Length: 93
Image (cartoon, rainbow, N blue to C red; front, side, top):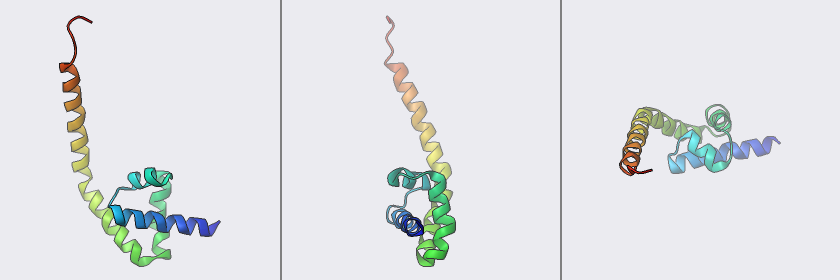
């Protein structure tokens, strides 16, 4: 069982480094929960593969710095979509 966990931890770490994705994106792609991926890459990976952990840590720090920008873009898309939908409404329903 521990071998399976170690393999999952390394796969998560390699995927994050390779794609530069967020913890949520990694969880979706690999079919795990966000909490599991976060625990894997922040706690377990440091003892299994310190070199990979340093790389993952730098990607996660970058994602943390950019988080407010991604949130702003999501809000912008949300309201642009609402505005577009209002423009498609007909007078006679």
